[in-house]
Amino acid sequence: MEFNQDRSIKSVDICCGLAWGDEGKGKIVSQLSKTGDYDFVCRWAGGNNAGHTIYKDGKKYKTHLIPSGVFYGVKSVIGPNCVVNIDAFYDELKYLKKEGFDTSLVKISPLAHIITGKHIDEDKKKYTKQLGTTAKGIAPCYRDKYGRTGARVCDMLAMFEGHVWDGELWGRVLCEGAQGFWLDVDYGNYPYNTSSQTLPYSACSLGFPPQFINKIFGAAKVYDTRSGTDPEFPEELLLDEELIEIGMKGNECGTTTGRRRKVQFLDLNRLIKAIQISGTTILILSKMDILEDVNIFKIIEDTEIKNFDNVVNFKTYIRTKITNECQFIQDIIFSHSKEEI
Image 1 (cartoon, rainbow, N blue to C red):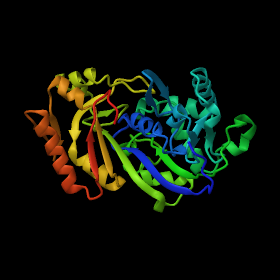
Image 2: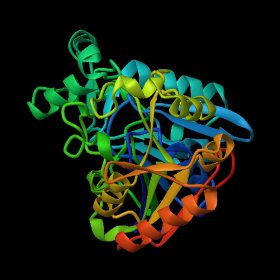
Image 3: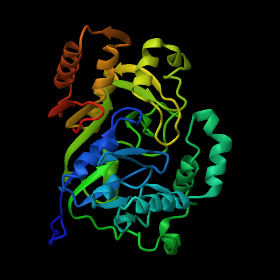
Image 4: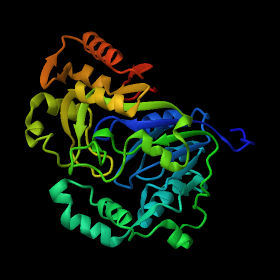
């Protein structure tokens, strides 16, 4: 990659989730990172409650906090609105270094907040069973952040020697989202949501004005999935034979928790709303091959289930509906699980 001499930001692309997480953002960011077009890959919110699965040279890797740019020699920044478990951070660095990746590329904002053991204990006791949290201490940490009682990376710089970010961005920047639109602290089914902002506007917390934003890649699957507790995803979904078949074929288990995800047919109204509010310009709908394999092509629209005879009619209907109703959409890509985007 060429050295950017003027040290100014050229453009910012953002990849965000349009559902409840697990939409394939890691794959998208991985494919974008390896093009060599970006000088930074940055994470803007959340902690190690998220998970990205990356395939590189035929090998599978998992990360929970560190951005995917590290797999392709790109500077990888954990931003100021993130929360960090020190032990988990260093475990991930150790794992990446053992696999041969350059962990000196990983930087963390001095303004990011620290997850403590007390946060994790409180999460386990109060929130995991009731709200279905990942028990990583995320919610208590954000509570202390907004209560002005939290500890930040800048309060313990010695712990992060060699990995503290200087706050400067330049060249072309790719922002990597965590979780998804319907887990956002404002737009999610409160209180069954995450504790941070998952919408792309929050990426500006990394330190750039919105005028630099170029493309917004919105990720979703061609069926909906949800980990954790949410009355909108009742337990009965785990008993539906068609949804079980889709979930089994799609290997729907959480990257971070390993929990079986609840599966539902794609809610097209929700997807359209997420596309519009997020400003998505390029929509990537993944796992098309799963529905093709099970030969089930259904969506939910206006609370009714619509069934399609074949994949062509299914894709055509979705494409037409989204194109007509989403003013910022420039392209819609239906992708298969193992193909490049």
